[in-house]
Length: 84
Image (tube, rainbow, N blue to C red; front, side, top):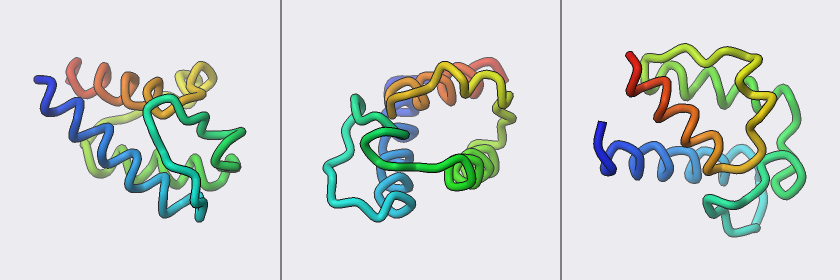
């Protein structure tokens, strides 16, 4: 995978988080998904399922425990996508 793929992942995540969060907060790579965007567990699981479908990957639920920012989620998706 290339940097373009990473940027594509980041853009998709930011776009989806904007819709899911219903927030006017600008979403950047350092935005905290839980505390700043108030994404609850149901919204997060729906987002993860959408990401899995979009990128044809499977994200282990336990891997989400370390994810707090948009960048960390993008890194996780990129890592899993690169390995597949």
